[in-house]
Amino acid sequence: MKLLKLATVALILGAPQVQAGIEKVSVYPWMTKEDLTKSKKAARTRAKRKIASLNDISEEAMSEKFRDFRDQFLKITKKEEIEMFLNKMDKEYDSYPDDLKFFAAQMIPFRAFKSFSYKMYPLLRKEKITHSMIVSRVLDFASFMRINLPTEQWDAGFRFASEPFTADQERFESAEELQKYIGEVVYPEALKAAQRIEKLSFKDQKIAWDHKLFYGTASFSDNFKRYRYLGEAERVGALAGLHEGMAWMKRFTAYNVKGSMKLAKHLGTLVGIDSFFSKVDGVTAKKVKEVFSKEEHKDLYTLLPNGKADLKVAFQHLRESARLGIIAWYEVKDRPANELDALNSMIIDPFRDRIDRGAETLEKIVEGPTKLRSDVTGELLLVDLPSFYENPPKDLKDLLPTKFEGGKKTIKKDLPTKEGRAKRVRYRNYFYGRAVSWDVKAYQKLFPEIKKGEDISKATRILNQSAGSFPVAMGMNAFMLYNR
Image (cartoon, rainbow, N blue to C red; front, side, top):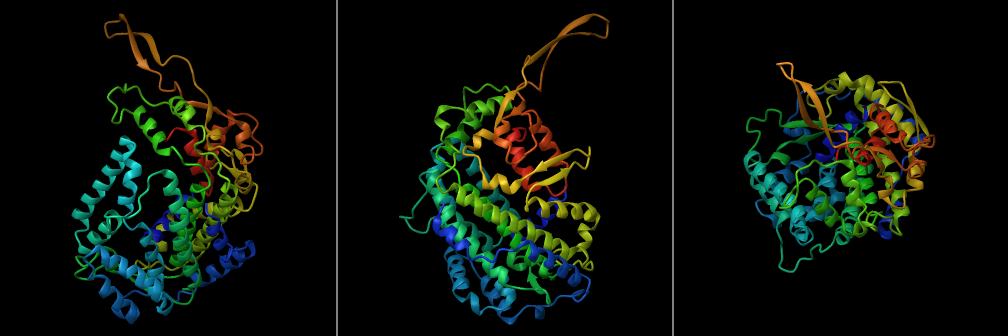
């Protein structure tokens, strides 16, 4: 269900190393441009049928096997039982009815995160700052869970992901080991889930979802808002979210991450985290670039031998996610409003025009060179996302700024007082050290018409003001160094 929520958010926001893994991807039934055209048309036709404008959900809406499974699942009290259930679901998956398959396909990959926090500890403790930040977040979640989700099921799931099962479990001693684990264990689990959900179809039916499976036994005592309907829009949206996640995984395995924890420590000291000698002086883009430019980080984020192949697959996942997201939008936008639908068309109706424009733009972006238009200024920008993935930077650090605004960090100025006398005041020049130019050559594949390094910021602004450009804009914002 989390993936479904992420897919929904992506739709709305869209409106504004392992060779074995690569071989497995080749069997995935990738959607073609022609498939997308047909699917959009069919989705709109289905949405207008009003076949599923149901206004009531009861236990009978779920298959008997799903209800039996739910009742057993809600008896879980130990982390070992979580593992048992996940393995049981994987083994028996083919025998399940569609409603249980949809749930199981998304739950089974959770087994890849068995003892994950425990496994991460050796890697994080090497850099005290990073370790402290991560532990603090886990502690925050643990407190949130005990207050807002006080059930034995949530407690068992938390322990499954955070505690060791045996004294000799393997742990991550380096960022490279984590990277390998993502590529060899997490990615195949996600791919298997995607293959399973792709084979399902809710075009002529709706299945029921029981929120009790998420919130646990201490919930919905009167059944109010307990159930929701899931249809083709929800299935396709969940699948889009999976592909978005796999695109990230393949990008992560494409570049060298050795030393990334040390980099995190160096960046942390800039803001005074856990550093006695730090001077609180603000973190400028220039300071961040200086940290990245240290000799000890020269190999960090450079393309690995398998990098081009992984990025090719990453783009396939990104394009698939975009196409699926568009289909999910066509499924839901003309669907009769129903508060019992997980994706209620009434909620997104105010954003209809903008999402329509975004979907049209997004479809073009993942196909090839596309002219984007700022919704604010009307300025145009040519973007070629496929070419950027086909010809990726050999070093991601090349995308960082090359020039920064100079002048004086502190401004001194004589200003009049209430009595009419002059008094010298000092104040901070908050534009000092901001990024003003980038390496044009590093961006030529992405922005074929850009001529000057200073125009990269303009290109990013147009991206942020163009509906449907988020696959490009999200990446660009990071290299502007204004949201570090």
